[in-house]
Length: 220
Image (cartoon, rainbow, N blue to C red; front, side, top):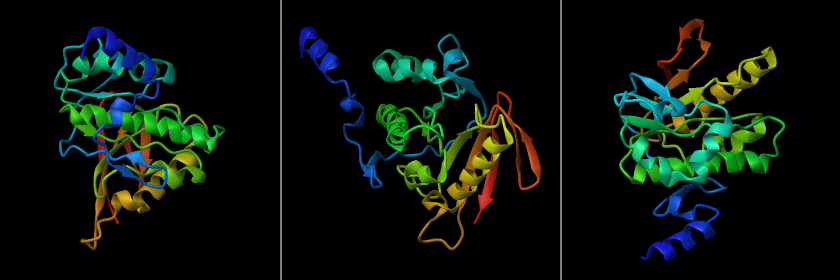
C-alpha cells in the first residue's frame, strides 16, 4: 500500500472502522466485545502523565476531561506506540452525562470499546472501564464486557453532589446485578472493581484510591 493511498484511507475513514476489524459484538446496539486481562493493576497513571512517563510498570487510565481524551480517538495510531510501553490500559472514560441524549451516550461508550478492542488486538492488556448515567443507560452500559470479569470504575466528576453520589451508587449496584457478575455455570460469582481518584464507601467501608487502585470483590 502506497503512502498516498494510506493517507486517503485515513482521511475518509471518519468512523475509524479499522478499530473494530476482527471484533465481535454484544448487545442490542452491538458494542465491540472486550477481552478482559487477568492481571491486577498495582499502579496507575493518567494518560496525560503517560505521555511523558517512564513508569512502564503502571497501567494507563483515562480519568480526565473529555477534551484530553478526544485526541486519542482523533489520532489513535499516534499514541499506540506509547501505550504499548505500559503494563496495561483501562479503556477510555468518555463521559455519559445525565442530560446527554441517550444515543450520544451510546456513541461515547462505542468510542471507548472500539479503541480498547484495537489496543487488545495489538497485544495490550485491557481492563474495561464501566460508565453509566441514569437508569436508561443500563440498557447498554454493561454490554461488551465479559461475564465474571474485572472492571474499572472512575469517580472522576461523578461525586460532587449528593444527587451525583446516589446515581453513582445506583449504577454500581445495578452493575453487580448485571450479566457482568453472572456466570451461568456457577451458583456464585464476583466482580473485581477498581476505584480511582476519589474516596469511596462500599458496604460501610471507606477506601482511599488516590493515584492508586483499590480492589473491592463483590459476591452475589
